[in-house]
Image (tube, rainbow, N blue to C red):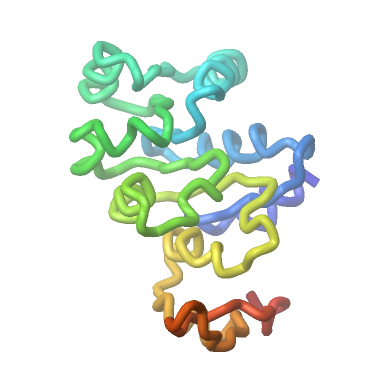
Length: 193
């Protein structure tokens, strides 16, 4: 299944691997990232930084940097050629270097963490300009398809949030303490989505 996922996405530079836990998202994502010539910026949860660094050092002949360390970040910014930098979601938007970076592959582990497009980290990541994008998640929506919009945008689908909701989310207006708000009642066109 890992080889099949890579074969089916070989011609794409923006992909999402939504594989259940234990099915090898780490290897699929890192193989895809390694297939591109650009440097790799991997964003993950803070608790997974060491795991990712160890993985890349063990299986790939690449220089790997822990971008939570300011000295290693400086080395990464000065490195010419392909390398890997690993940083966590809550720190990436605080490092000014990433606001201007270009010519890189962006890989997000647990991409569902950008589902709230109004959060600082999500806004920042959605504003980046990577050459390639790889999203990894076992639970990309948690069963709530409305939370998939920001990931679709990062993959290059320029659908507005309003049109996305109109095409895929069923809602109704309900009154709540004198205020009217939309309530989600279901989903439509799920197979197409």
